[in-house]
Image (cartoon, helix red, strand yellow):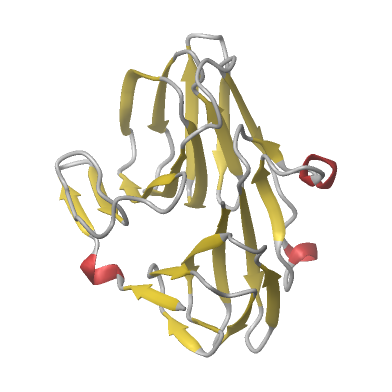
Length: 234
């Protein structure tokens, strides 16, 4: 089953520097039918204005993945990590037993990001932060594992998370089809960052989400040039 979650139906928050859209219940937005999917609790679609961002604050026991769609984001934390993640690249922050961090857009243009929170497999992991540049043009037309806690995915260059889940991404030329196998008893959440795709024949538009359940595999066809992410979940 493919259940499309239209972008227009997402929860929303807007102020002078942040435009946030919530795929699942978050902060003051509550949707009784969208309280996450398995260990995936949060998928926020954020636009952050130049020179602004999230001042230092704390998290614990959460795997927080940030995918930058446009612009760049700069991270700093109490562990001494400082880094910049630009469009198409990914950062992972394992909050573990506790981390204090800030995220700012220090660029001249808005930053557009997906922020994804996944519940870890246990409490009290060691906190850490990593960022990685992923292949761009040479990876067009195939799925790339961006972050994962599944066995063997670290050998493919994926950033590590503490959960039996994976985040995959793809940029697809128009007319390209890629497939993704979904293990028995597993599910997935797909979000289109750019363009329009068909998932097992069901159309999913730009910034829409799609819940995938009861499918052994999905075939994703790019209607035009497209960019997408898939969270593969227990």
